[in-house]
Image 1 (cartoon, rainbow, N blue to C red):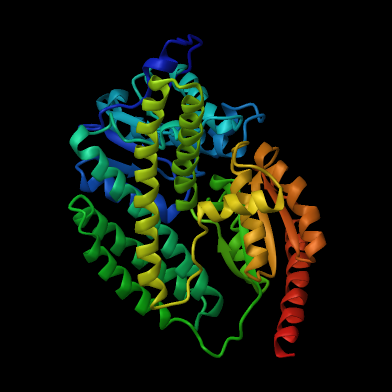
Image 2 (cartoon, rainbow, N blue to C red):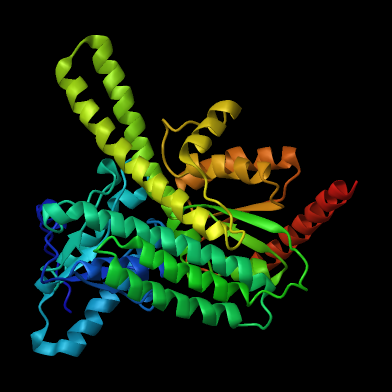
Length: 452
């Protein structure tokens, strides 16, 4: 690949957006490892050639083509796509055609830098003469990540349902892993098990997802849970419960957070991470809130046009949220009848927490809404410590820190900030050990209270 200097800014609109994925290779970067593999399987069930790219193998490339002012996930995903395309070019030689690929990079509105990743990556790809044909497929939180335009309209809603279901299943598999790994009979059993489980779920989603035959997938999931329960050693005593919040990419990307969950487990924790489905629910909930506010404003001014527009959005996003929460409740009800996995946070509950405590507001937006309210909910549920994971200099997570840290000090619940970039912090493990010592003290103190 040869880099040029010509930048066509028109490409930012023409080559970033929604594109028909038929007869294309749809490249999905890793974030939540289980989640992206299950999501790719759901897409394949609809005839889309979806592939999960290796991650962090091209991190040096990502650093080379970024300045360091971008947040860490931008460096990782930029390196992932450049590394993949470089290897494809080597593999295919003269047969390589960049127009065969669509790189998946969604976006969100607001002040978060995530909204600019795909624009910046478009400029980078256009600087290589043989990569200008690669399209960047972008979905946006502004319309709740609608899938219209990437597949036939009549199948878009079914693909959205299967995609959401795949994310929901991946959250459950993660929570199953975190439930059994701290108590496994033999080191490595849980990791081996979850790899098999992921493959089974991939096969099931690819086979049944497009048919919306979710009961058959649930049946497979129940078999997996029953197998996983056998790995737990009942003789291992309970451990301090640690909740994780923060920026969605870094807290779910194992390499980005330097395998933080495993490190916490090493020092005696049982860990629950905020789910990926929570963010998808939040986008629908937030658009639903905006639509209701817009309708009320139109009604106040007696303007039929805006009222009609916002009423349509109320029905659309309200329907999305209803379906997502229905499917989520259904899944966790079946799962929790077999094993005590942590339930997911409800968006209305998180919204009410912020209002009750006057800590923040959903009107401001960003992941800070979820993180701050999630921390309060962890405290109410008796967690023994909370970790806020985020890219170095992340604005929403810095806001979270400013509000949550004094709150946790007041509640006497251990709290740890865990910012990450590509460097390895020399005192990181010592900080985790100190945090876990405090969490264990909190755990023992609460256990003594229960005895009394």
